[in-house]
Length: 259
Image (cartoon, rainbow, N blue to C red; front, side, top):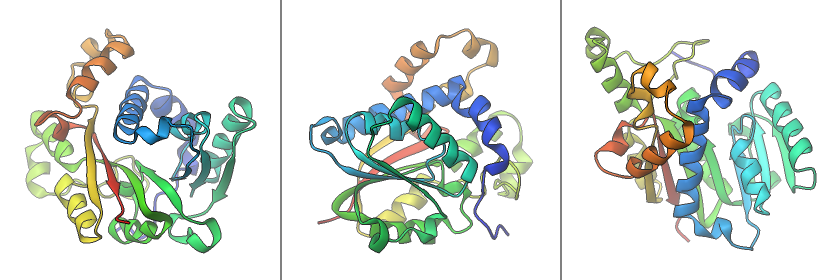
């Protein structure tokens, strides 16, 4: 049983090259960014919003939001990840309104940080020891009528990927979660599961998208031969279409807290 949230201090350099600096990282960022702008057009308006990026990593999406004039608070359990985010902001957006908080998600307190128009939680939920409990606590940080942008590792896509690779015993065992210290998430989550939590808490989902519904299933030689912008174009065509969105390596949901 996993008893601690995953801290990526030990893998910050590897993430910089193999995740954030890779084609799959570029595709993930492009899909989530376009889906956010489409679902929340107020992000492109002149009014500044308060936004929390929980488990911010290197802060790529946060920098784009700061570039639109929004006020950002970035938090991460990893001191190394957060330090890299600070360096990137200093280099690219030295005048941005941004605060950095080195802390576990569970300690983020609305009395200290205030509340936010939008809370981002991207590729974090699946690495938590208690994902449902932690997410439920974070809802207090969202203003009434505010929004949650939630991206998580898709358990159904993991099942399908193992099926087409012939890993049938693994699928039949149901043991798909990773172990402490590994790179497979602790808690891959299904859309049905997460939506049931949000419904229980009174949030309404206003947008769904699959992230990498094509790329992760392509033959390696074929996908390496494609330009990233060409892959993004095709991914965007199918990211919100049934049934393809359910095959995304990640799922991106935008939900609204009631007023």
